Image 1 (cartoon, rainbow, N blue to C red):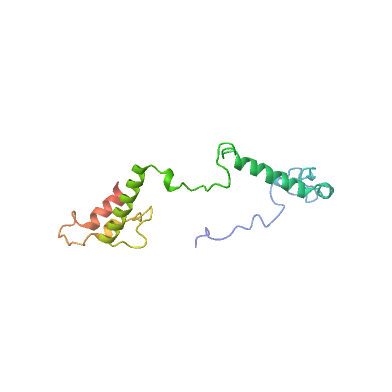
Image 2 (image 1 turned 60 degrees about the vertical axis):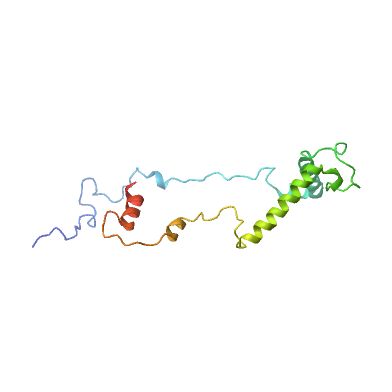
Length: 165
């Protein structure tokens, strides 16, 4: 019978190899993984919310400063008060300020829209931006036609598109 699958007991019998006769002698070799790591402790810096620093901070003042800075940044893009109309005047343009040409155009476009809506029926979600973006939406609308040719069948065309391209 072959002995290839049998375990070897040589490592279990200690002290039979070269230089292994004396068990009291310890090896001077050691692994790098046995070395100590993380030997220094990190201390919290003064800017890392130390308890004494938190006690001395004025959070309300800091919050108000940040809010003022954000308001300044937000209002920077707006025109100043001298360029805008007074706050008592309505912001909406009045009808007498619109030139007659534009007013005529607006009334025609509104009547056209109303007529267009009456001629065609629309779904409630037809005015979305990304419509029919799903993959394979056009393929569902096509009628499935049986073609008695393996190279011209729909399955073969899809397979070639998907895996060969």
